[in-house]
Image (cartoon, rainbow, N blue to C red; front, side, top):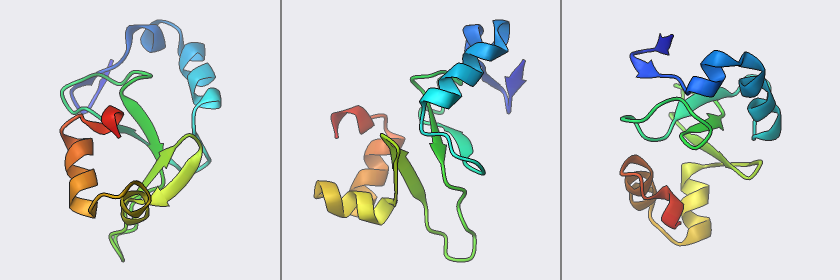
Length: 98
């Protein structure tokens, strides 16, 4: 089973309760979207993030880290990067260095 051509973590496919357990212990909140971090990876615990859906009206993007949800702009201000700098690091897989 794949979603949008992206492979799904073997443990989650084999045992859906493993996905449920991960969800309950991650930053999941009702109505959040499950997004992938590295586009060339799989849906897995290390490569997924729960995010507030993007509101097309204002195009604000939100990120959740350690159960705290802020806009990309607010996260960038908090860690001292430009919005583009933070987004670039996220897209290029350098988010673990933040």
